[in-house]
Image (cartoon, rainbow, N blue to C red; front, side, top):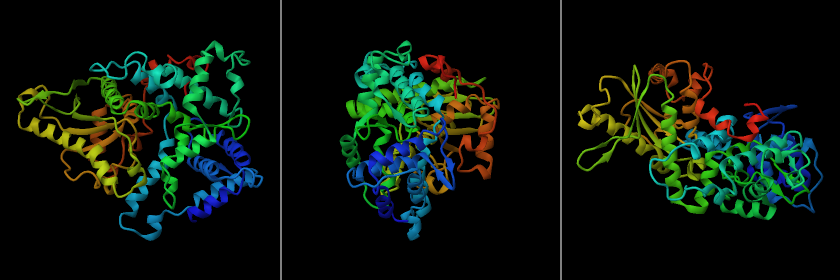
Length: 474
Protein backbone atom coordinates (compact mmCIF):
# COMPACT_ATOMS: atom_id res chain seq x y z
CA UNK A 1 0.00 0.00 0.00
CA UNK A 2 1.39 3.42 -0.98
CA UNK A 3 1.06 6.36 1.37
CA UNK A 4 -0.61 8.49 -1.33
CA UNK A 5 -3.33 5.85 -1.77
CA UNK A 6 -3.95 5.73 1.97
CA UNK A 7 -4.16 9.55 2.20
CA UNK A 8 -6.74 9.60 -0.58
CA UNK A 9 -8.78 6.96 1.26
CA UNK A 10 -8.86 9.01 4.46
CA UNK A 11 -9.62 12.35 2.81
CA UNK A 12 -12.66 10.83 1.13
CA UNK A 13 -14.68 11.83 4.22
CA UNK A 14 -15.44 15.20 5.77
CA UNK A 15 -13.47 15.76 9.01
CA UNK A 16 -16.70 16.47 10.90
CA UNK A 17 -17.89 13.01 9.86
CA UNK A 18 -14.72 10.95 10.29
CA UNK A 19 -13.05 12.49 13.33
CA UNK A 20 -15.84 11.99 15.90
CA UNK A 21 -16.01 8.33 14.89
CA UNK A 22 -12.24 7.93 15.15
CA UNK A 23 -12.33 9.62 18.56
CA UNK A 24 -15.08 7.24 19.64
CA UNK A 25 -12.84 4.31 18.75
CA UNK A 26 -9.85 5.98 20.41
CA UNK A 27 -11.79 6.52 23.62
CA UNK A 28 -12.04 2.76 24.13
CA UNK A 29 -8.33 2.44 24.98
CA UNK A 30 -7.67 1.85 28.66
CA UNK A 31 -4.73 3.71 30.25
CA UNK A 32 -1.53 2.18 28.92
CA UNK A 33 -3.33 0.02 26.34
CA UNK A 34 -1.83 0.12 22.85
CA UNK A 35 -4.14 -2.02 20.76
CA UNK A 36 -7.71 -3.21 20.52
CA UNK A 37 -9.23 -5.62 18.02
CA UNK A 38 -12.55 -4.69 16.46
CA UNK A 39 -13.85 -7.38 14.17
CA UNK A 40 -10.83 -8.38 12.09
CA UNK A 41 -9.09 -5.00 12.45
CA UNK A 42 -6.19 -4.35 14.78
CA UNK A 43 -6.62 -0.75 15.95
CA UNK A 44 -3.71 1.18 17.47
CA UNK A 45 -3.49 4.73 18.81
CA UNK A 46 -0.77 5.63 16.29
CA UNK A 47 -3.02 4.56 13.41
CA UNK A 48 -5.90 6.69 14.73
CA UNK A 49 -3.54 9.62 15.34
CA UNK A 50 -2.37 9.55 11.75
CA UNK A 51 -5.88 9.16 10.37
CA UNK A 52 -6.89 12.22 12.40
CA UNK A 53 -3.90 14.19 11.10
CA UNK A 54 -4.57 13.29 7.48
CA UNK A 55 -8.25 14.16 7.84
CA UNK A 56 -7.49 17.51 9.50
CA UNK A 57 -4.82 18.48 6.98
CA UNK A 58 -6.22 17.06 3.75
CA UNK A 59 -9.95 16.55 4.38
CA UNK A 60 -12.54 18.74 2.68
CA UNK A 61 -15.60 19.55 4.73
CA UNK A 62 -17.99 20.46 1.92
CA UNK A 63 -16.92 17.77 -0.53
CA UNK A 64 -16.43 14.89 1.88
CA UNK A 65 -18.64 11.84 1.94
CA UNK A 66 -20.53 10.66 5.04
CA UNK A 67 -18.69 8.14 7.20
CA UNK A 68 -19.54 5.32 9.57
CA UNK A 69 -17.49 3.03 11.83
CA UNK A 70 -16.81 0.67 8.93
CA UNK A 71 -15.04 3.53 7.16
CA UNK A 72 -12.86 4.22 10.21
CA UNK A 73 -11.87 0.56 10.40
CA UNK A 74 -11.15 0.45 6.68
CA UNK A 75 -8.88 3.48 7.04
CA UNK A 76 -7.09 1.66 9.88
CA UNK A 77 -6.69 -1.42 7.68
CA UNK A 78 -5.19 0.70 4.91
CA UNK A 79 -2.82 2.29 7.41
CA UNK A 80 -1.76 -1.13 8.68
CA UNK A 81 -0.99 -2.19 5.09
CA UNK A 82 1.37 0.70 4.37
CA UNK A 83 4.73 -0.40 3.01
CA UNK A 84 8.02 0.56 4.60
CA UNK A 85 9.94 2.19 1.73
CA UNK A 86 13.36 0.84 2.74
CA UNK A 87 12.25 -2.74 3.35
CA UNK A 88 10.20 -2.75 0.18
CA UNK A 89 13.24 -1.63 -1.87
CA UNK A 90 15.70 -3.90 0.02
CA UNK A 91 17.94 -0.91 0.80
CA UNK A 92 21.15 -1.40 2.80
CA UNK A 93 20.47 -0.84 6.48
CA UNK A 94 16.73 -1.26 5.92
CA UNK A 95 16.16 -3.25 9.12
CA UNK A 96 17.97 -0.66 11.26
CA UNK A 97 16.03 2.21 9.71
CA UNK A 98 12.74 0.36 9.96
CA UNK A 99 13.33 -0.38 13.66
CA UNK A 100 14.06 3.26 14.46
CA UNK A 101 11.01 4.49 12.58
CA UNK A 102 8.64 1.94 14.09
CA UNK A 103 9.93 2.75 17.57
CA UNK A 104 9.40 6.46 17.03
CA UNK A 105 5.97 5.92 15.54
CA UNK A 106 4.54 3.38 17.97
CA UNK A 107 6.37 3.09 21.25
CA UNK A 108 5.84 6.72 22.25
CA UNK A 109 2.33 5.57 23.19
CA UNK A 110 3.59 2.77 25.42
CA UNK A 111 4.03 4.84 28.60
CA UNK A 112 3.15 3.64 32.13
CA UNK A 113 0.35 6.11 32.92
CA UNK A 114 0.64 6.62 36.68
CA UNK A 115 4.44 6.79 36.75
CA UNK A 116 4.54 9.10 33.74
CA UNK A 117 2.14 11.71 35.07
CA UNK A 118 3.49 11.46 38.61
CA UNK A 119 7.03 12.06 37.35
CA UNK A 120 6.13 15.61 36.29
CA UNK A 121 5.57 16.75 39.88
CA UNK A 122 8.19 14.40 41.33
CA UNK A 123 10.91 15.78 39.08
CA UNK A 124 9.87 19.38 38.50
CA UNK A 125 8.36 20.35 41.86
CA UNK A 126 9.72 17.90 44.44
CA UNK A 127 13.35 17.60 43.32
CA UNK A 128 15.95 20.09 44.55
CA UNK A 129 18.29 21.47 41.84
CA UNK A 130 22.04 21.37 42.34
CA UNK A 131 22.46 25.01 41.30
CA UNK A 132 20.46 28.21 40.99
CA UNK A 133 18.18 27.84 37.96
CA UNK A 134 18.06 30.48 35.27
CA UNK A 135 14.43 29.92 34.25
CA UNK A 136 12.79 27.40 36.56
CA UNK A 137 12.42 29.73 39.53
CA UNK A 138 9.20 30.27 41.51
CA UNK A 139 6.39 31.10 39.10
CA UNK A 140 7.94 29.54 35.99
CA UNK A 141 5.16 26.95 35.60
CA UNK A 142 2.40 29.55 35.88
CA UNK A 143 4.12 31.64 33.20
CA UNK A 144 4.65 28.69 30.88
CA UNK A 145 1.63 26.46 31.49
CA UNK A 146 -0.99 28.78 32.97
CA UNK A 147 -0.88 27.10 36.38
CA UNK A 148 1.26 24.87 38.55
CA UNK A 149 2.62 21.59 37.23
CA UNK A 150 -0.06 19.83 39.29
CA UNK A 151 -2.74 22.05 37.70
CA UNK A 152 -1.39 21.25 34.24
CA UNK A 153 -1.33 17.50 34.85
CA UNK A 154 -4.76 17.63 36.49
CA UNK A 155 -6.24 19.38 33.47
CA UNK A 156 -4.85 16.71 31.18
CA UNK A 157 -6.13 13.99 33.48
CA UNK A 158 -9.59 15.59 33.37
CA UNK A 159 -9.51 15.70 29.59
CA UNK A 160 -8.41 12.10 29.27
CA UNK A 161 -10.84 10.78 31.90
CA UNK A 162 -13.72 12.48 30.13
CA UNK A 163 -12.91 10.76 26.83
CA UNK A 164 -14.26 7.33 27.76
CA UNK A 165 -17.81 8.15 28.86
CA UNK A 166 -18.10 10.93 26.25
CA UNK A 167 -16.76 8.96 23.25
CA UNK A 168 -13.76 11.21 22.70
CA UNK A 169 -15.58 14.53 23.00
CA UNK A 170 -15.27 17.28 25.61
CA UNK A 171 -17.79 20.06 26.25
CA UNK A 172 -16.15 23.27 27.44
CA UNK A 173 -19.32 24.14 29.36
CA UNK A 174 -18.23 21.48 31.87
CA UNK A 175 -15.56 23.85 33.14
CA UNK A 176 -17.62 27.03 33.21
CA UNK A 177 -18.04 28.94 36.47
CA UNK A 178 -21.36 27.30 37.26
CA UNK A 179 -19.93 23.83 37.05
CA UNK A 180 -22.64 21.17 36.71
CA UNK A 181 -20.51 18.16 37.68
CA UNK A 182 -18.72 19.34 40.80
CA UNK A 183 -15.19 19.76 39.38
CA UNK A 184 -14.77 23.01 41.28
CA UNK A 185 -14.46 20.98 44.49
CA UNK A 186 -11.10 19.70 43.26
CA UNK A 187 -9.71 22.25 40.81
CA UNK A 188 -9.86 25.98 40.18
CA UNK A 189 -11.98 26.20 37.05
CA UNK A 190 -10.50 29.49 35.82
CA UNK A 191 -7.09 27.84 35.85
CA UNK A 192 -8.43 24.75 34.11
CA UNK A 193 -10.00 26.87 31.36
CA UNK A 194 -6.79 28.80 30.81
CA UNK A 195 -4.65 25.68 30.64
CA UNK A 196 -7.10 23.91 28.34
CA UNK A 197 -7.19 26.78 25.86
CA UNK A 198 -3.47 27.55 25.83
CA UNK A 199 -1.90 24.10 26.21
CA UNK A 200 -4.25 21.38 25.00
CA UNK A 201 -6.36 22.91 22.22
CA UNK A 202 -5.77 23.98 18.66
CA UNK A 203 -8.15 25.05 15.92
CA UNK A 204 -8.16 23.41 12.52
CA UNK A 205 -6.19 26.34 11.08
CA UNK A 206 -3.62 26.18 13.88
CA UNK A 207 -3.25 22.42 13.49
CA UNK A 208 -2.54 22.76 9.76
CA UNK A 209 0.06 25.44 10.43
CA UNK A 210 1.81 23.28 13.03
CA UNK A 211 1.76 20.30 10.69
CA UNK A 212 3.55 22.26 7.95
CA UNK A 213 6.51 22.84 10.29
CA UNK A 214 7.35 19.11 10.28
CA UNK A 215 5.70 17.93 7.10
CA UNK A 216 7.50 15.26 5.06
CA UNK A 217 5.33 14.45 2.04
CA UNK A 218 5.89 11.00 0.60
CA UNK A 219 6.45 7.49 1.94
CA UNK A 220 8.05 8.66 5.21
CA UNK A 221 5.27 11.14 6.02
CA UNK A 222 3.59 9.09 8.73
CA UNK A 223 6.79 8.93 10.79
CA UNK A 224 7.06 12.72 11.11
CA UNK A 225 5.95 14.59 14.22
CA UNK A 226 2.18 14.63 14.70
CA UNK A 227 0.89 17.93 16.18
CA UNK A 228 -1.65 15.96 18.22
CA UNK A 229 1.23 15.19 20.59
CA UNK A 230 1.35 18.91 21.43
CA UNK A 231 -2.34 19.77 21.29
CA UNK A 232 -4.49 16.63 21.69
CA UNK A 233 -7.84 18.46 21.50
CA UNK A 234 -9.19 20.00 18.29
CA UNK A 235 -11.74 22.82 18.32
CA UNK A 236 -14.04 23.98 15.55
CA UNK A 237 -14.63 20.74 13.66
CA UNK A 238 -17.82 19.98 15.61
CA UNK A 239 -19.48 21.88 18.45
CA UNK A 240 -17.35 20.15 21.12
CA UNK A 241 -13.65 19.50 21.46
CA UNK A 242 -12.54 16.33 19.69
CA UNK A 243 -9.81 14.24 21.31
CA UNK A 244 -8.99 11.84 18.47
CA UNK A 245 -6.52 9.77 20.52
CA UNK A 246 -6.81 9.99 24.29
CA UNK A 247 -3.48 8.18 25.01
CA UNK A 248 -1.45 11.10 23.62
CA UNK A 249 -2.50 13.14 26.65
CA UNK A 250 -0.27 11.03 28.89
CA UNK A 251 2.77 12.16 26.93
CA UNK A 252 1.56 15.76 26.84
CA UNK A 253 1.51 16.01 30.65
CA UNK A 254 4.81 14.15 31.08
CA UNK A 255 8.14 15.93 31.59
CA UNK A 256 8.75 15.45 27.85
CA UNK A 257 5.63 17.44 27.00
CA UNK A 258 6.61 20.20 29.41
CA UNK A 259 10.15 20.19 28.01
CA UNK A 260 8.94 20.95 24.48
CA UNK A 261 6.73 23.78 25.73
CA UNK A 262 9.60 25.26 27.73
CA UNK A 263 12.06 24.96 24.86
CA UNK A 264 9.66 26.79 22.55
CA UNK A 265 9.47 29.68 25.02
CA UNK A 266 12.95 29.89 26.60
CA UNK A 267 15.29 27.69 24.56
CA UNK A 268 18.51 26.25 25.96
CA UNK A 269 18.26 28.04 29.31
CA UNK A 270 15.16 26.02 30.10
CA UNK A 271 16.78 22.84 28.79
CA UNK A 272 19.79 23.36 31.07
CA UNK A 273 17.58 23.85 34.13
CA UNK A 274 15.48 20.82 33.35
CA UNK A 275 18.58 18.74 32.67
CA UNK A 276 19.92 19.55 36.13
CA UNK A 277 16.61 18.61 37.76
CA UNK A 278 16.58 15.37 35.79
CA UNK A 279 20.08 14.48 36.97
CA UNK A 280 19.10 15.09 40.61
CA UNK A 281 15.88 13.14 40.10
CA UNK A 282 17.84 10.14 38.86
CA UNK A 283 19.89 10.40 42.05
CA UNK A 284 16.69 10.28 44.10
CA UNK A 285 15.71 7.08 42.34
CA UNK A 286 19.13 5.49 42.81
CA UNK A 287 18.98 6.14 46.55
CA UNK A 288 15.92 3.88 46.71
CA UNK A 289 18.07 0.83 45.93
CA UNK A 290 18.47 -1.21 49.14
CA UNK A 291 21.99 -1.37 50.59
CA UNK A 292 23.40 0.94 47.93
CA UNK A 293 26.09 3.56 48.40
CA UNK A 294 25.36 6.40 45.99
CA UNK A 295 27.99 9.01 45.11
CA UNK A 296 27.55 12.04 42.82
CA UNK A 297 30.05 13.02 40.12
CA UNK A 298 33.63 13.48 41.26
CA UNK A 299 35.90 16.38 40.27
CA UNK A 300 39.43 15.21 39.56
CA UNK A 301 42.83 16.40 38.39
CA UNK A 302 44.38 19.88 38.15
CA UNK A 303 42.00 20.81 35.35
CA UNK A 304 39.05 19.86 37.57
CA UNK A 305 37.39 17.55 35.08
CA UNK A 306 34.19 15.67 35.87
CA UNK A 307 33.46 11.96 35.98
CA UNK A 308 30.14 10.36 35.13
CA UNK A 309 27.12 11.70 37.03
CA UNK A 310 26.51 8.94 39.61
CA UNK A 311 28.33 5.98 41.12
CA UNK A 312 26.28 3.23 42.78
CA UNK A 313 28.24 0.74 44.85
CA UNK A 314 26.36 -2.53 45.37
CA UNK A 315 27.38 -5.86 46.89
CA UNK A 316 28.30 -7.50 43.58
CA UNK A 317 28.88 -4.62 41.15
CA UNK A 318 29.54 -0.92 40.72
CA UNK A 319 27.21 1.04 38.45
CA UNK A 320 28.67 3.95 36.48
CA UNK A 321 25.74 6.12 35.48
CA UNK A 322 25.63 8.98 32.99
CA UNK A 323 22.39 10.98 32.83
CA UNK A 324 21.24 12.44 29.53
CA UNK A 325 18.11 14.58 29.36
CA UNK A 326 17.82 13.85 25.64
CA UNK A 327 15.03 12.54 23.49
CA UNK A 328 14.92 11.08 19.95
CA UNK A 329 15.17 13.91 17.42
CA UNK A 330 13.32 14.07 14.12
CA UNK A 331 16.32 12.55 12.33
CA UNK A 332 16.32 9.55 14.67
CA UNK A 333 12.55 9.04 14.47
CA UNK A 334 12.67 9.29 10.68
CA UNK A 335 15.94 7.27 10.42
CA UNK A 336 17.29 9.74 7.88
CA UNK A 337 20.89 10.34 6.83
CA UNK A 338 21.66 12.25 10.04
CA UNK A 339 20.38 9.58 12.44
CA UNK A 340 23.81 8.10 13.17
CA UNK A 341 25.35 11.52 13.82
CA UNK A 342 22.47 12.49 16.10
CA UNK A 343 22.65 9.27 18.11
CA UNK A 344 26.40 9.71 18.48
CA UNK A 345 25.90 13.26 19.72
CA UNK A 346 23.23 12.26 22.24
CA UNK A 347 24.37 8.80 23.38
CA UNK A 348 27.80 7.95 22.01
CA UNK A 349 29.59 10.54 24.11
CA UNK A 350 27.89 9.22 27.23
CA UNK A 351 29.49 5.82 26.70
CA UNK A 352 32.84 7.51 26.14
CA UNK A 353 32.43 9.25 29.50
CA UNK A 354 31.59 5.95 31.21
CA UNK A 355 34.64 4.24 29.73
CA UNK A 356 36.89 7.20 30.58
CA UNK A 357 35.75 7.07 34.21
CA UNK A 358 36.31 3.31 34.33
CA UNK A 359 39.82 3.82 32.96
CA UNK A 360 40.52 6.44 35.65
CA UNK A 361 39.54 3.86 38.27
CA UNK A 362 41.92 1.32 36.72
CA UNK A 363 44.71 3.90 36.76
CA UNK A 364 44.15 4.64 40.44
CA UNK A 365 43.01 8.25 40.10
CA UNK A 366 43.25 9.45 43.74
CA UNK A 367 39.92 11.28 43.84
CA UNK A 368 38.12 8.05 42.86
CA UNK A 369 39.65 5.94 45.61
CA UNK A 370 36.30 5.84 47.43
CA UNK A 371 34.87 3.68 44.61
CA UNK A 372 35.88 -0.03 44.87
CA UNK A 373 38.05 -1.19 41.97
CA UNK A 374 37.64 -4.92 42.55
CA UNK A 375 33.94 -5.25 41.72
CA UNK A 376 32.56 -5.76 38.18
CA UNK A 377 31.39 -2.53 36.55
CA UNK A 378 28.25 -1.90 34.54
CA UNK A 379 27.51 1.35 32.72
CA UNK A 380 24.04 2.84 32.38
CA UNK A 381 23.02 5.80 30.26
CA UNK A 382 19.74 7.04 31.74
CA UNK A 383 17.57 9.06 29.34
CA UNK A 384 14.48 11.16 30.03
CA UNK A 385 12.62 9.67 27.10
CA UNK A 386 12.81 6.10 25.84
CA UNK A 387 15.29 5.38 23.06
CA UNK A 388 13.68 2.13 22.03
CA UNK A 389 15.76 -0.49 20.18
CA UNK A 390 19.06 1.45 20.60
CA UNK A 391 20.60 -1.40 22.61
CA UNK A 392 20.16 -3.82 19.73
CA UNK A 393 23.38 -4.69 17.91
CA UNK A 394 22.34 -3.37 14.53
CA UNK A 395 21.31 0.04 15.95
CA UNK A 396 24.12 0.31 18.51
CA UNK A 397 26.65 0.29 15.67
CA UNK A 398 25.28 3.64 14.53
CA UNK A 399 26.59 5.50 17.58
CA UNK A 400 29.04 3.31 19.50
CA UNK A 401 32.29 1.79 18.29
CA UNK A 402 34.28 1.39 21.52
CA UNK A 403 32.60 -1.33 23.60
CA UNK A 404 34.48 -0.69 26.85
CA UNK A 405 32.75 -2.02 29.96
CA UNK A 406 29.31 -3.68 29.64
CA UNK A 407 26.86 -0.81 29.28
CA UNK A 408 23.48 0.02 27.81
CA UNK A 409 20.78 2.68 27.61
CA UNK A 410 17.80 2.68 30.01
CA UNK A 411 15.02 5.23 30.30
CA UNK A 412 14.05 6.85 33.57
CA UNK A 413 10.77 4.89 33.41
CA UNK A 414 12.78 1.66 33.46
CA UNK A 415 14.91 2.96 36.31
CA UNK A 416 11.87 3.89 38.41
CA UNK A 417 10.66 0.32 38.03
CA UNK A 418 14.02 -1.46 38.38
CA UNK A 419 14.90 0.17 41.72
CA UNK A 420 11.76 -1.34 43.28
CA UNK A 421 12.25 -4.93 42.16
CA UNK A 422 12.42 -7.52 44.92
CA UNK A 423 15.50 -9.01 43.29
CA UNK A 424 18.84 -7.24 44.04
CA UNK A 425 19.65 -4.76 41.29
CA UNK A 426 23.28 -5.84 40.91
CA UNK A 427 22.35 -9.49 40.47
CA UNK A 428 19.71 -8.56 37.93
CA UNK A 429 22.02 -6.35 35.84
CA UNK A 430 24.89 -8.85 35.93
CA UNK A 431 22.57 -11.53 34.60
CA UNK A 432 21.39 -9.18 31.87
CA UNK A 433 24.83 -8.26 30.56
CA UNK A 434 26.15 -11.83 30.85
CA UNK A 435 23.23 -13.55 29.10
CA UNK A 436 23.94 -13.85 25.34
CA UNK A 437 20.23 -14.21 24.61
CA UNK A 438 19.53 -10.87 26.28
CA UNK A 439 22.17 -8.88 24.42
CA UNK A 440 20.55 -5.81 22.94
CA UNK A 441 17.52 -6.06 25.21
CA UNK A 442 16.37 -3.84 28.02
CA UNK A 443 15.82 -4.29 31.74
CA UNK A 444 12.07 -4.46 31.36
CA UNK A 445 12.06 -6.77 28.35
CA UNK A 446 14.12 -9.26 30.38
CA UNK A 447 12.52 -8.91 33.82
CA UNK A 448 9.09 -7.46 33.14
CA UNK A 449 7.29 -10.28 34.92
CA UNK A 450 9.24 -9.96 38.20
CA UNK A 451 7.61 -8.61 41.33
CA UNK A 452 8.16 -4.95 42.19
CA UNK A 453 7.20 -2.73 45.12
CA UNK A 454 5.47 0.66 44.73
CA UNK A 455 7.99 3.40 44.02
CA UNK A 456 7.82 5.81 47.00
CA UNK A 457 8.97 8.83 44.97
CA UNK A 458 6.22 8.20 42.42
CA UNK A 459 3.66 7.53 45.16
CA UNK A 460 4.48 10.77 46.99
CA UNK A 461 4.00 12.77 43.80
CA UNK A 462 0.79 10.94 42.84
CA UNK A 463 -0.79 11.77 46.18
CA UNK A 464 -0.33 15.51 45.58
CA UNK A 465 -2.83 15.43 42.71
CA UNK A 466 -6.43 16.17 43.66
CA UNK A 467 -7.70 13.41 41.39
CA UNK A 468 -5.70 10.78 43.30
CA UNK A 469 -8.29 11.07 46.07
CA UNK A 470 -11.16 10.22 43.75
CA UNK A 471 -9.42 7.95 41.26
CA UNK A 472 -7.35 4.93 42.22
CA UNK A 473 -3.96 4.28 40.69
CA UNK A 474 -3.78 2.34 37.43
